[in-house]
Image 1 (cartoon, rainbow, N blue to C red):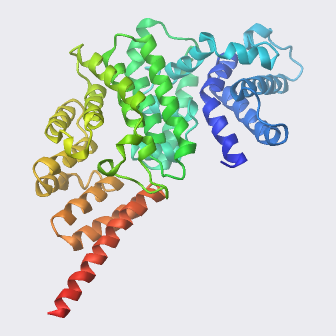
Image 2 (tube, one colour; image 1 turned 90 degrees about the vertical axis):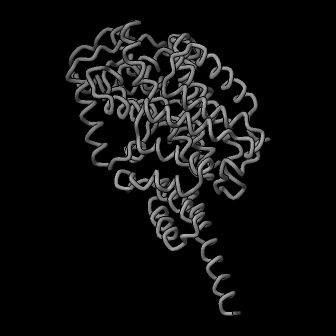
Length: 424
């Protein structure tokens, strides 16, 4: 990994802790963001010369805090500074800070930040979008892609959310037990989207983007410690673990996508799978099914299959049917169609997804699946059109390369048929 890539990764990993602490000090989202950005600029200048700090998060908090205080002084001009305890309770020593950063006080900063972003005064879509921007530092483009909307629309959504937080005078304190429970669904959804952003990558970016998946798992575990008897949080944590367990086998040595059925299952993380399966079983014993539990149960069926042929596609089809009832979505139906193709054949699956085209006209996976089903039915010209559309919508180079592989296969088969006909 290059020096710049390492610095970028370190800053991304440290962002939740640093933003949470800076928000606690300054009690203003814009001030905290400005302080963090200034600290990042100084990191880009100093770290290459002086080497990496012992604890990047502590360094960014320390520098951001001082930068923020300087900004307050400049704005206040000759006005007296507020008392120190109104701004910060942080000691002016990086070493002491690094030691204290591991304590519950600083870990709670992240949850405080999550719950503030997911305040009930905000619509759910704004809660999740602003949390992804502020907590994890995802770009507007990345967040827009996760929501299947345009960049300008997402930019407006985030701007409105931040303005509403400021105008509403949202208290920058850790919510009480009742408030935490009310906001839990939005926080869980935000953690899930953070994971998906890290998971939806190409082989070359996977090592750099993996920290997003790891951060989402860490946050899910943190939520589970707060809500130990909540089966949906068990399901969420299990789902992320079972998905991330497959990370070492998802790309080949050239960075190209390896489909689930072709993956070397010996590369899957047994430790993560065992932890995820235990959580699935524990969640289901509560007999309070929810969307995360159902998705985790689907992932568990894949994890328990020693070979692709051992996969219980009938049960997966049933589980996706249950998920459609709980959380109707064209993407859920699209995923169910994969199971249907295994159980009832490609024609039944194609009939299931055809009505979704208008709603998924900008979705890569729709056209990728449609092309694959058409290939199985020997409708190659239609498959080629679908694959061309998929390439145009690909989010990563790996996705585009995977579709080109199918197109190359179509071209090869067409050439072989032409040769046979000429020979006749």
